Amino acid sequence: MKRLLILVLVFLFLCPMSVQAIDMDNDGSIRENPYGDSKLPSCYEGVEYADCYIPYKSTCADIGGFATSASNAAHQVSTGGGTAMSLVVQNSKVGTTIMRETSYSYAAGKGWKLVRMSNPSNFSVTTDDISMNVISDANGNQYYMTAVQPFFFRHDKAGQGGFPANESGGFGQILDVILTDGTCIHFVCFDINAAQHTNGVDNSGAGAFDYVYVNSKLNYSQYNNLFSTQNGNFLEIFGEGNAATVNFRNKYNIGTDEGKNQIAYYRMYGTYLKDSPKRADGVGTEVSFSYGNVNISSSGGTNGEDGDETMTFKLPKEEELVGMPEKSKLMDGTVTINAVDRGSLNSKEQFDVSNLADDLATNTAWKFAENARVAVCFVGMFLIFYSVFLILASLFDTVNTFIEVSMVGVFTMGMLEYSPEAVGREITGVLDKSKLIKVSIVLVGVGLLLVSGGLFTWLSRFVIFVWDIII
Image: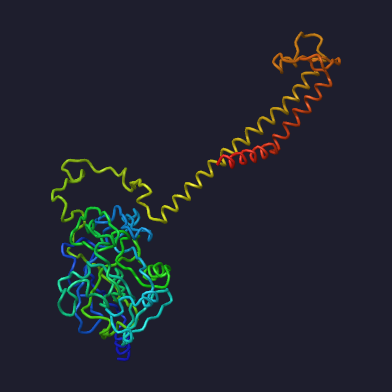
């Protein structure tokens, strides 16, 4: 009986520790309708919500509508202007790029949109340990702040149940950003991104106040206005300094690589910061919490191969044809290199390319200098050895009485002859002992000067001096 009671107590102790997996019905595929209800527990009691499904398996290039070029209006040129989306961002998974809009301190100093959100006395703002601005409502609930794209205001509940009819009424609206590992991050909409700054928009008539983007083809019209046409981001956070974006990404392990988190849902609530809604039990007042273990199931989407604006006919793959031999594995794992011009690179990439070009030019200059130094040393060594052989040839000619040949003549190609007897200066073409010693000293001296590098140093200085005068 005693053992039975112990087993019962152990069972009762272990049962509460078991964790129930939460079903997440978004596997990142393309959906015909990207809005719906994920059935994930709500973070706020008695508040309506609408879920926006993110195609996180797709890249910005897959979705399309991104900026391929940009031009500036007259008075915007001094700001640096818009640019085309970089190749790196094009190939990043949707939503993994995070940008910083500004800091709350700057926005508050400008009185920026505070009136549209709430009475400032209803909330307080602090900065957390990762430099993110944290805003707290009257109940002490904490939120991060972000700008929101127009896509997230176009769900089926727009204009009903406390939801704004469109993005213009979204200032101060509460939303959750839910990651693929079940992390739920609480946000307040502090700004709305202009539609002409998002993907898929033809803003050729944007007017003189703004940048004019030329966008690529939008492959899926249901994802119009989903991300920044230039930077590819949804989230545009508020924090003190640009380090806030890096710290935020690291804290929540967000990235495009395998093993990183992606954004699975935006959950838009029909309530605002000024309402200070009551959070559900277990959610807490912090800026984020976890739903626990997550089981990701199919969302009923497609594999992303066919957009709604592409042809419905698709050629079968070669290995799918009847009677074809097994597909060769030779090309598996190969990576296609897409060559781009500098105009399609962002400022950091252009800076890196410029540094690389400078390094290559410096290496080329050093190679030329080293080759020149080797050539000069070779000439010096030649002069030294030539003087040695000239002396040996003169010794041979002195003792040679049996062969009618002049070794000095051979070494000088017939230009000089050697005479052991002294000859006057007026006699040319004949070397005596005195002249031979003088010639040898000059040859060895010049040769040593060339080998030691002293002459090369003076030559280099002379070339640089002349070059500076010419330039």
